[in-house]
Image 1: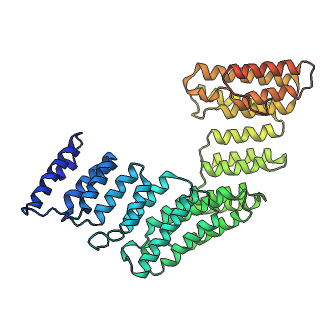
Image 2: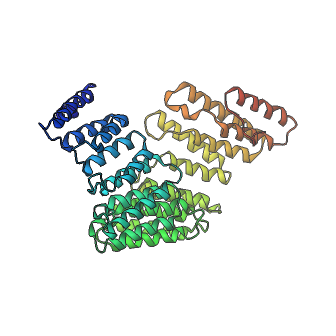
Length: 447
C-alpha cells in the first residue's frame, strides 16, 4: 500500500484501496489487525490527488464501530490536509471540531491539525476569516492551558498564520500588534514561540498600508522597529525600514524630516557594515514619491538630486523610479523636460543601453500634463502621444501595456475640453467615439 501511495500512476489509488480491502477482510477473519499506517498512506495519496470524496470514505471506515483501527493525529491531519487542498474548508472545520477526542477516547487533535485548517483559512481569504482565526487561536490556548488537550498549544507557525490572516483582512494594525504582543508575552515561558522577523514585519506592513487613514500608524511602526533593534535574535532589514518609510510617506502629516532621518540612518548603518539595511530600489521609490507629493516647486530639483544620490550609491532604478520623476516634472509644468526624459528612456531601451522599458503609465503621466496646460498645441501633443502609444502596442509584442486605456482617452478629452475653443465639443465627441470603437468603455467623467 505504501509503495502504491508513493506512485504517480493514475491507477495508484485504486490499487492501494484494493489491498486495503484485502487487509480489512483478513482482519475480520482474525488473521491480521489492520493499524492506522496503511490508512494514513492512502489518505496521503488522497491529499496529493485532492480526492476529498475517497478521503472521507476512508475516514468513515476508520470510525466505523466494527473497525479495529485506532486513528492518530497523523490520520486526522492528513484528512484535514486533503479537505483543505480540495477547497473543502468547511468540512475540515467541522471534522476538526468533532475530533477533539476520537471514538476510542484518545486525543486526536494536535497543533499541526489546527495549523493545517488555519493555513486553509489563510489561502481562501474569505470574509470573516479574521474572526475564525482569532477563535481558533483562543480555542487552542484554552484547551492547552486548562489541560483539556496539552497537544494543541499554539506555536510560532500558528501565530504567524493568524497575523497574516488579520493583515490580509485589513484588520486595524493595533489589533494585529496585540496578537504579536500576546505571542511575545507567552514566549517568556516558551521560547519556541518567540516572535520572529517575519511576524514583526507583517505588523509593520499593516501599519504601512493603513497609515493614510491612521494618524498614529507611522509612529507605531517606528516604535515597533526600535523594539526589533533591541532584540538580539531579530535583526531589522531593509524591508522593515521601507515599511516605516512608507508609513510616514503615506501619512497625512507627510513628515519629510522623519523620512530623511530614517534614510540617513540606513546609510550610516550600511556604511558601518550592516548590509541588511542597505537602501534599495523600493527605498528610492518611496522617498521619490514622498517628494513628488510635497507641495513645493523646489521638490523637483530635490527629487532629481536625490535620484542622482541613489545612483551614486549603486541602487538600481526601475520604471517606477522614472515615472515618479516624470510625475514631478509634469506636476509643475516642466513638460519639455518630461518629454526629453521619456524620449531618452525609449531610445536607451530600443538601443539596448537600458532594460528599463517605458510603460503605459509613463505616457499617461505625459498626457495628464498636456491636459493641465489647456492649449491647442498641448492637445496636438496629446494626440501625437496617443498615436505613438497605439503604434508601440500594435508593432511590438513586449509593449502591449502601452495601448491607450480609459485614463489615456480621458486625459486627451480633458486636454481639449479645457481649451475653450469653438470646436472643442466636436473634437471631444470624436475622441469619445474613437474610444468606444477601440473597445474602451467610457466612465462618467468622460461624459
